[in-house]
Image (cartoon, rainbow, N blue to C red):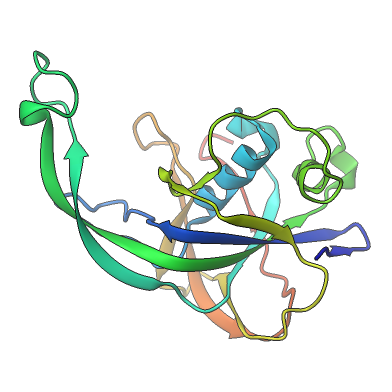
Length: 217
């Protein structure tokens, strides 16, 4: 399937069997957020097109929706850490058991807005080239969503309305969901959080655009 609306917006369907969106302040018990943060979706799109520089497409606008809501479960896993520099990673004191929440059955719809005035750094064009035009891209490793071990099953572009309700991530100052749109991996000074709420709508493309900007813009 494929959908390009007058070269203004592009929508794709991403299917992920298992993943986790770790809550920012989770420590001993690794909680997951039930909805993917915009920063995670943006990172996935960059990985899809093989882009390593996050700043390359800063300012892009994306929309995020989910078909249904994923099932949540808890697993016991081994977490690596560095407590003793004398031992290799994952051995001795450098590992411990931790409970982690995971999500299963993710069907995510992502919209990318076209910015024709910025042809060189247009995320819409790059995703279109990769998904619709099937042009060659240079990337490495598996395509993940969330942690690197959580691999994507399918990426399809959407041609027709889905004819089913979609749970949209709607920017709102009154929303109770605080999600990062940009993550500073060195400290936290540049991390940007925005407030969102979930809204169920049968309209295929509501105007719930999220602009991806860093805290240092």
